[in-house]
Amino acid sequence: MGNCITQNTNVQQNSPSSSDLNSVHYKNSFEKQMIIGQGGFSRVWKVQSRKNPHDIYALKEMSKAKVILKNSLAQILMEKTILSKMKNDFIVNMHAAFTDRDSMFLVLDYCNGGDLRYQMQRQVFNEKETKFMIACLVQALECIHTAGVIHRDIKPENLVFNENGYLRLTDFGIARQVPFLQTQNTTTDFQDNSAPKYGIIDTSGTPGYMSPEALCQLPQSYTTDYFAMGVIIHEMILRKRPYNGKSKQQIRESMITKQVQIKDYEVPVDWSSEAADFCNLLLKRRPQDRLGFSFGIQDLKDHAWFKGFDWKALSAQKLKAPWVPPKGDNFRKRETLDFFDGSQNFFNEDEEMDFLEIQKIILRDDMVKLFQTYNYQSPTSNIINIRPLNKLQYKSFKEKQMSQLKQKSRNQSNIEKLNRIKPQIIEDKYHEVKVQECEWNEFEQPRSNKSANSVQVQSFSSTAQSSRKGSFNPNEKSRFFVKQVKIENHSNEDDWN
Image (cartoon, rainbow, N blue to C red; front, side, top):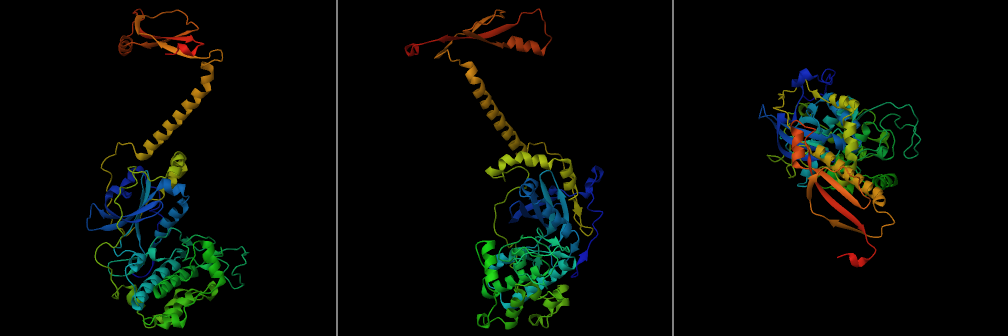
C-alpha cells in the first residue's frame, strides 16, 4: 500500500461517553518493554499487546503537565489530527490516541531498525544505499504533501528503519497544513517578486536542517522539506552539514553570506556527479530556484540521479533494500522507567511552584473536554482494547507534591503569623523573661480570673476525652491537668542559672 490514504475521522474524534468505554484505549492494554526514545515532555516505549502478544507497537507518552508548561498543547493536538488523516507505508502510522489522568498517548507503528542518525554514527553509507533511503523519503513526502501537510522537521533522527531496510518518516510534532496568505511579505532578506506568497511563517525546526525561508521568517511551502532532504544528502556525501553554527542566528548569517555547493573535485570517488547535482539543486537558497518548486515531487523523480529507478516496485515495497539493519532492537540503551503515573519526579526545581497552577488548568472544564477529543482509533486498526481491571486507590506523586507544597505554604504562613504577634507577647517594659516550670498538679476546674504575671494552660485529661465518646453528663465534674507557668520579671542577669 504505497499510495497515501486519507481517512475520515469524524466519528472517531468525538468524545466517548461513559457507556462506551470499550472504544477507549488504556495504557494497561500494553506491556511496556523498553524506552526507544525520549524528549522534553515525552517518551516512546516499545510495547506489546496483552491480548495479542505478537503485536508490537511504539507508544508515545506525553505528560499533560509538561505539555502545558512548555506551551505545546496546540502542536500535540495538530500532530494527532494530521496522523489521523493519513496512512502510508513510508510514514510511521498512528493506530490510536487516548488519554488518562496524567498523560496523552499515541499508538504508532514500531520500527526496530533504529533511526538514521543512530546508524550513521556506526557506519558510512554508499551511494546506492543512500539513493534507496532518499527514494523512501521522496515517497513519504509525496504522501504528506498530497495531503497538504509540510513536515518542517526532516532530519536523520526522524527517519527510522523497519526490519526490511525501508525508511519511514516520523514525528509530526511541528507539521502544519499549508495556508494561503493574503498579506505581503515585508522581510528584506531573500525578497523576490517571484517568491511564494503563501505558506507557514514560523521559525520552528532543527537548526542546521531549517531552510533559509524558515530562518528568515518567510512563507514556507513544500520546498522547505526539500531543502532539509538536501542537507541529509550533503551529510551523506561529505560527512558534514552545509551550514553550521552554534545558534540559529549564526546559521542564518552563513546562509545569507554564501551559497553552498558541492564542487566537482569534492565529490568522492565512489559517488556520481548526478548525486552531487541533485543535492546542489535541493540546497538552493531561494525556494523558486529549488528543485521541486515547479512540479513538486515529480521534479525529484525525474532527475538524472533516479534515472531507471523502479518507483512502482518501491511503492509496493517489492524492491530489496541494499542495506538492512541488524536483527533485534537498534536503539540506544536507556534507563527503564515507569509510565508518567506519579512514581517519579519529572519536574525540575524551578517548575515545582508552577505545578499547582498547571493542575488547575488541566482540571478546568474546557481543558477536560479538549483532552477528551484527543481519543481516536483508526478504522483499520486491529488493537484489542482492555478495560482497567480496577481503580487504583493510591495517592499519586502529583497529589503528594501538591500536599507538600500546601504544607510548605502553611508553615510559611505560620512563621509570618508568629513574627507578627511576637511584639505583642514581649512588651517593652519587660527587659528579661524567665520561665519557671512547675509540677503538674491535679485539681478540679477553677473559675478564677487569670493574673497578669501567670498563665494557666489547661488541657483535658483522658477522662474528659473519653467522656466525649459516650454520653456526656453535664453534672459530672471533669478533671483537668493544669500546668502552671509563672512568668516573672528580672532586672539582673545574675538571676539566670
